[in-house]
Length: 419
Ligand code: LLP
Image 1: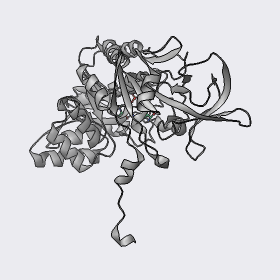
Image 2: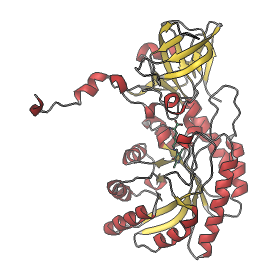
Image 3: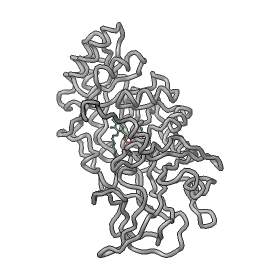
Image 4: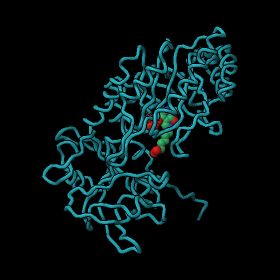
């Protein structure tokens, strides 16, 4: 459910006609709906409400915009961060350091040190080596790091290979069979307080079964570690719940996810931690684009839009589907290829897609672009960095400026020895 609907034949974000934003800000532009974000944050939180002790940390990588993080902080969310930059954003958004989980497979010593100084609530360790480094830095600072060990459960998430993380051959976590021994060794180090286990098997999961299998394995590991007399008070179950990208696709609901978690974790007696990203932000954003040109193709015409793979990378990277909808559809449909202006064939949003007939100058949106959209944008082909807008009822505001090529050019230097 979202708040991007047609009123009098014009697609709106809440009460704002998208042509108003496109006219004022230009295109391409990401538009987020505050009501949609808030709704998702609450639906997910409510789905977990029956669980005894929970902590929800929004996966900042999905949408790190400061306004988005502020909104989620106000909804009681903490943050799951994977870099020093994301950590500073979460703190700037007013999230308590205690509510921040620091994940990531390659945290540098400087990032670990800064996280400790900031009072980060939990470090999710991806290896024994990282735990040893963190312990040493913490001890040198006279601090104790609260940490969890990320375990690779060797479960196939059944999602796209590039966003699967829980198979044995993936780079994430420590092998399941070695986890208990590593946990025990890390727990003995001064500077480190091992308090739990973490798991995340992948993103955009369309079935809850792999999650359930992974959680069940983690429960077994938790019991084995406790049997050795060690404390496991926190179990971080990661993110991964998928969202429908195609109108009409059915996906597990947050309520079904919550019920599954309640079933698997019964009797765990641990604080359950969650790191949702896409399920919170995914369909609370659209990418608004303008048709530049329509040109004939062999099997179908090419609709060339002013958004490109640098603005929305998912189709090029993962063959991902984003529904394409005209902002003022005329009622006729055609089969077309939707492409951007960038000079490589991967800059293709869709081939042979049944779409609203559009003409040069028309506006359209790629839906479900609120997660892994703007955050993955870049400036390839010396294009601008795409701006972001948030709508709230009939109000709207720019929440990230367009960074134009001149600004980027101004940051470049030619050394005087070059000429
Ligand atoms: N926790 C960890 C440790 C993660 O690595 C991720 C996502 C999440 C939580 C959040 O997962 P979510 O709930 O959003 O599925 N760029 C890709 C997605 C990459 C996800 C990486 N990790 C895409 O556009 O599909």
